Image (tube, rainbow, N blue to C red):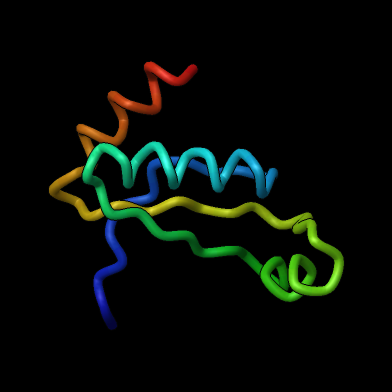
Length: 73
């Protein structure tokens, strides 16, 4: 199984998710999402997911990502 990195944030809001992905990528940290359950399908049809969306980064960027996210809060 492919290593997917480390989950650094869990969001229930697609706008918040997009904002965090943009923040991480603007700092040079590659980030991607994985939705639990049928979340991706619900978002496709309704524009909103009721399942948590997990934001992942490479393990080597975990500490930098956590610092950025702490500053965001």
